[in-house]
Amino acid sequence: MSVAPKNGEFLEGKLWFARKGSIVTVGLTSAAIEEIGPVETMEFPDEDDDFGKGDPMLTVSGSRGTIEVIAPATGIIKELNTAAQDEPEMVSDDPLEEGWLVKLEIEDNSELLEYTA
Image 1 (cartoon, rainbow, N blue to C red):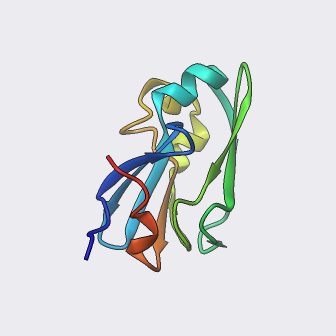
Image 2 (image 1 turned 60 degrees about the horizontal axis):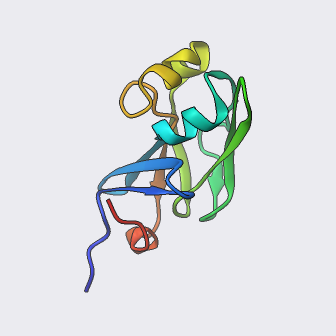
């Protein structure tokens, strides 16, 4: 039996995830930032909103474009990065650490099997 990855990229390398147990943190990659430009605004969901795998969870707009952040697996929003919401430049400056976007509690780790680190 395959073990679900702890980290990976999806949406053609524009989004990343890091999994700890059933909690998956999702954010933009540097490639996404390069494409959309410096982040200017984000439309966040509410905590406890639920999403199916592939559903758009939030929209991030930059100076050159917009990207929809999709759910890598079915789950419920457990935490939003409110600091990034207040200071969108945090996402552009540090997309892989401080600039994470949402934490999703997923139902089935096997939904992540198609993604590899």
